Amino acid sequence: MYKYTLTRRIIGLICLSLAAASYLILLRSEAILEEALLDQTKQQAQTFLLGLESQLRSMEKKPSEADYQKLINTTIKRDLSSLDFSIYQIYVFDREGKILAHSVPGEHRSKNMKPHYLEIFNAGKSRLGNKVEQVVDSNSDRTITKTDIIIPFHFQDEVVAAFEVEIDIEKTLVVIQQLDDQYEKELLIIIILTGSFTLLLIWGGIKRWLLGPIVDMRELTNKISKGDLKARLDVASRDELGRLCYSINRMADSIETLF
Image (cartoon, rainbow, N blue to C red; front, top):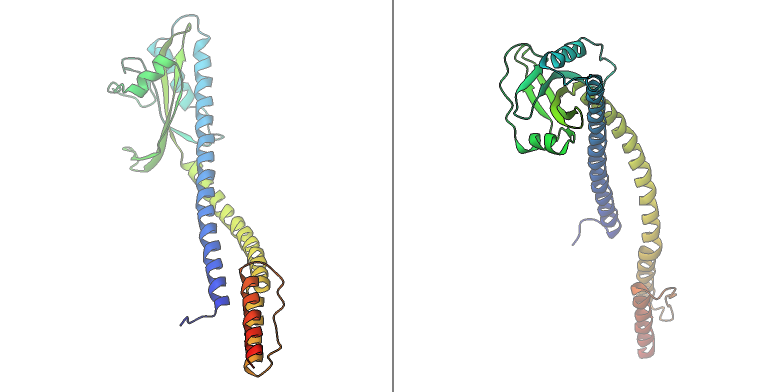
């Protein structure tokens, strides 16, 4: 024996299905929104680096380490508050991994030239950060969420160096969180409204095409049990319930014939 009526069970299943679908839609749409904003920040950082590259490409001779360092020093002193990110580190390295210039003063170890770094020199294509990682800044002991963008520096149709900027995307994450909160509220309102409307439509269909015939069958059996052997069902469809109603009418005919 079921504890709840058929109506309640059906409505319960529908509500669970709508809630599960809404939750999955919410999660997926939030992920898409976050990816889009992060990609936008990466594209902005790439454009920023391309602007630096254009300043050096106008030189008549191949830039020296001093030229790279001068450009970096000038860059980090600029007002970059309009950007969606802040610069954590920016540096230039050559094909062998040697650091030619760096935003942080001091000696720096050569870069481990993994295949994806060599591809920048071989193919001459930029590389947008594929992952976001957290590091602890040794100076401030602050945890920084960062990603890196690398572009090749072309001089006379040859890739002679690569610019890499490690960007602190904290500002982007704050914007993402604000948009997520607003997006969740608006999406929940839409889900509640559309879910309620859908539930009403489904309930209307169930009441008319499923529960209605079942109630008619129950009333017919009550009439027959009380002696009304001429009572019959109106068969209005050819679906499963319609065929069941037809069978019940035939049973009623058989009972009337016997008596």
